[in-house]
Length: 318
Picture (cartoon, rainbow, N blue to C red):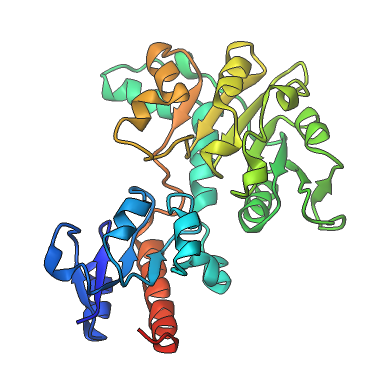
């Protein structure tokens, strides 16, 4: 029986969808009995799909991931072995209905600008010290959107509604006339022109360490608040720490970190996490990649890639 190995938890509804279409579903890779039957691996954002894992299944033809990121999949191996990756990038129509990343963006922004997160923690500890958590107004601020794709545009619309002036830069787009958005000619000009920076560039290899000390030196004398909901590796985290410690970045909110789940000890080795735990005074708030993590999005995403898997399977002779 054709088998789908789930590397991470999928909903019972998705498992039932696979079963109803006559696919066996397993969640262990250590069973020799099924290794020749596995034609697909289902994965998400918490566990890497390595060459060693894929080599266990000689008839593997598909990787299903209900996410937009594929950086945890060894794509050099899937290319050589002609293993098809089916992801949310194959369903742009569905992606346009997802707004959850901008919600996490706003929560992170309010946490570093209004000290909402730290204030709530203090109340949990039995404290009521309003004066310790005086923040900064959001209304009236200038926000820069670095990367004006789907999420960048959503954040722009949100911030316009909250009374902010929006600037944007995207080196892949020639966008000059969008109501309410002021496009600038470079990332350096953007970072020098705003009070807040939202990082929304994609996961192209060329964007590795895009945010670095050279770019951060363009920050104006008053400093900026910064939120990253894109990918951890698009910033040089040592340079982010340098900017935090030198007052250039007034607060940094991250829903992503460099090296996510690449090893069992990756978090303790992460420079931002280690610095936050060593220096509690840093205005640094980190969430565990919650951008798309809502019940509604997860179910729709799983079903989307499974249905596309059915289509691809029917077109493939296995």
